[in-house]
Length: 296
Length: 292
Image 1 (cartoon, each protein chain N blue to C red):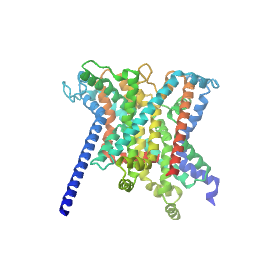
Image 2: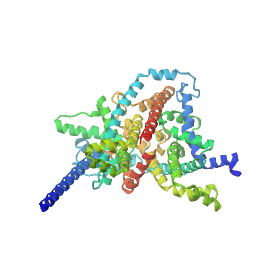
Image 3: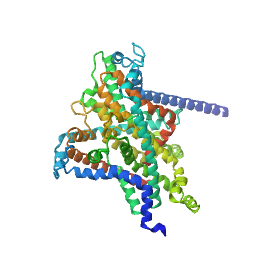
Image 4: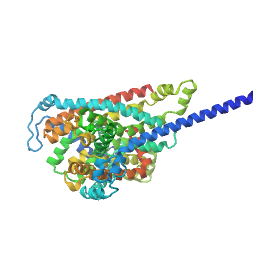
């Protein structure tokens, strides 16, 4: 009797385990198929970038065209879109704007958190929080009018970098504000001040090092936004020599749309840098984006 | 003593917050108010003078049927996209938090479309619609197919499909954070009390993930409502301007037709809509906090 129940139980268990394994298998299969469908557009660009034009038109779905595998599209596309130049522009603008955003936002958040009763602190912080609902479309015409018409400072990488920073400080200050409030004990600063450090030194030696995780989150969110931004750079940079990758792609598509092979190669070149970075930093990027979205 | 002096306070504030505040004011505050002023002028973008025209631009904006058509289209596109984005994202988040092998790999994979800007994504999908889908259609039906991008509804469908594809992975990450924030013991308790998996999801887990829902729904709403890059590269407003969304209409009004005053007035109406959406979000978010 007793042995009977034990056997029944173990049979039940085994059934449950099998059922669970099947369910897991089914879910993994479903997810894999979905993921394949998700990345299929990129796969199409990848395969077609190496085909001749007649193969792309005749057989866009084949993996290797009947005329074989060729790198010709890349050499021409790189030359025509001035790949290294636009890549360099994008890199310089993204890196400088990201670093500047982090430095000036952390500084501003510090003085606002530690002096919440100052009128300037209240005013600056509430203006920044409120400004987050303003869509860029409301600002683009006056921006071009003021900086193009009156001041004539468009067509400069520096102008674009400073504008990127200006647009991103509100969210960054907001995030540093939260981090300083919860993660930086005032006692630590007081200890540094007793040792003779001024506010400026205290901030850089005691406070800022504690803000590294937030700085990483801000860096990931802003670097991706700056690298991919199209509208602001297209309004600020009209000189071809200053084009960033998204503008170069847009112009390229309009001009060489007949040679679809070149377009495929250009699109692949535009996506490659960030995909390579993602392979290396994938875990940090996913964590940073989640943290930024949940706090922001 | 020193710390109570006004000059000390001003100095401290400028030293730390000066650069951020100046840049912020220069690109957000000043243009915002200057833009308000522009809505009362008829500036053509070239002339030195900006003639004052009172409320004429607002009257023109209200009479601009193309603008209201674009706005209506944007609302339809946004509502459908937001619903689908959130359904797909929630479903994906559920699958990648259920303890499967390689779930981090899947999370990272579904996020990939968000790494790439709207301009490039639009061109990638333009190729998919114009070549790959046409080739599949031709193979299936045996006759030469046409691209979906050539028809009004097809173009709208394409914009929705690509938006869902793009944002689902991003919203999935927020829902994943929400799922991980729910204590496993609560679900177990519900299951022991006799709930089915579906009941536990509906009555225990989803209510606890309320803030994730609020956040995802509003984030995807504002993203979709202000769509521009994808609109420009995927459909360019074609066919016959029937896929022009609100942001593109405003851009064209100002920079293509050089009607800056009316364009700015129409942009301001978009801002008011965004501000109302933002206020609703704050209200809904606060209400949830009290209940929880």
